Image (cartoon, rainbow, N blue to C red):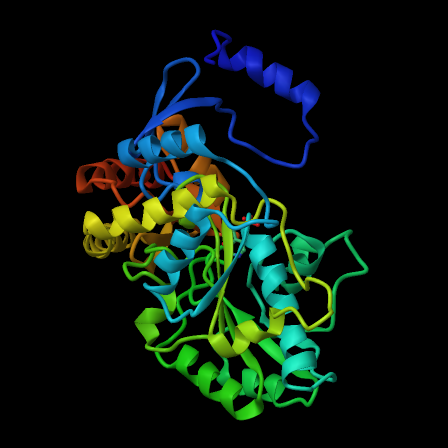
Length: 414
Ligand SMILES: *Cc1c(COP(=O)(O)O)cnc(C)c1O
């Protein structure tokens, strides 16, 4: 069903009907194709957000759309009282392309991380026989989700304000500080560390080479587990299937969501054989973890399609190449607009430009000029376009961002 109502009309209706928890750009989107979107009034936007690193194949990708439509016509939900064909194929599609031996499906990134925390706690308590090992180590500046458990793991106090008492114990250490991680994980109560291979919401912060490998070694030495939150960095976003591949290490547990379904909600907890034992049903015991919608045939068909299309179309190499093009263009903005554009960051098609001031105003002005961007942290403008974006489209977005910088929007006043 399409609507013939105008943006102004719908925005007024939304103002009366929504809980006011968001701060959306005043745009009502109705249609997309690839890296382009159109609002209900027919205005075109160039999309550098891909729904926050979700729509990795772009909007309305023809083959993904066809495969989803076919699945909708066959089966959408049966619950985990039974197996379904699509979930088994999706688990194979993930495990055959990763370190993981086993997968648990859920629906969102927060659910995947909350599931991972249950998994590592139960592994310590029931498999390793270490009931005192309950503390989850996390990093300052991290983002792991919005549920009470995952907001408690998130190392940015603004997300936790007003929601206490929180889940714990959680111990925060500085990102990219191996000595701090070693001290926290050496405690006899340490259970696991959860970490993003690149801190995304925190400002697109790439750790120095050797950091993730160092964490792997510390976890092995201390009997703690290594959990990579790849909700944003996974599924090809950095030019490899999983962000940790750049560092030549594998975790015990990896969480996925965002890009995995190409726009259809799906999350996953991926684990080694050893770590997966934490969720094994005990003889005579209850099911330790479950999700009604998790592993449903529609979402898992989407995940298999996304992985197969990325592979068949050579999109990992394209993410690398177009990511380097974008990174070079952002570095060019830093050279051209010193003071307003301070630093280009990122890997693959997860990129950021740290600006001198008013990052939110930069995003708003770019949107007025027809380019959709988002924020990462307080002062970073994020690019996370779809993997099918063309270099011409990237250049168009860079030109608009250059115009916004030239207008002085991001220039500090004092
Ligand atoms: C987005 C994000 C989450 C939360 O995912 P939701 O699907 O919004 O629950 C968790 N971790 C990271 C790294 C993310 O980028």
